[in-house]
Length: 268
Image (cartoon, rainbow, N blue to C red; front, side, top):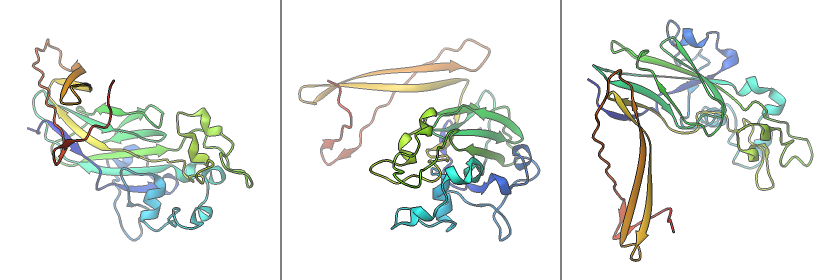
């Protein structure tokens, strides 16, 4: 039986440009799983991170944060979207039993992605800031590694950077649900891959037949922050075909530095 809870999947990923991978997602997650090697197009991936971060890690491109190195990196407006469309691949183990369910979670992918797990396909909705939680219970196996391949696509309208007065680009990326500053702004240079990648946490979570969704905690302080009123809401999803009676326990903790509790957001 798998332990109830979340497991982070931020290590062990590899990546490759889609145009140099001769297999599709079904093949990558069944008969032709990739690996690193001297003749392999695959490289260690940075997760969470962008395609540029992976390329910098593997010395494919220079670090754009230094000097004028960013000018030597090809821009997606010149290369085309395919140049920064990448496969990301990893594996994980699972040992579900009974009424347990397993979700594969992506806290953010920019911009769109095709998900494959053990030969099964799932299209993920577009949007840089979307969170994805996919119930893969019917696809996972307990007799070996589970193979995951994610084909990540750049924004649909990455835009072009004019050769002169390029700060802000042509603003085409404003047609997508993405940050517009990645085409360049008065305070930064253009980001060549437009922040394409799996740029936030990846995890798997094991639940029972009922899943807790989007818990939200609101705090109101009194007596010069000596007392606090906490208001919590959440959704519950019953994944079984039977009526479920639940007991919900909420545990709230604080991280202390000395005798001070650091509060990031105050509600008046």
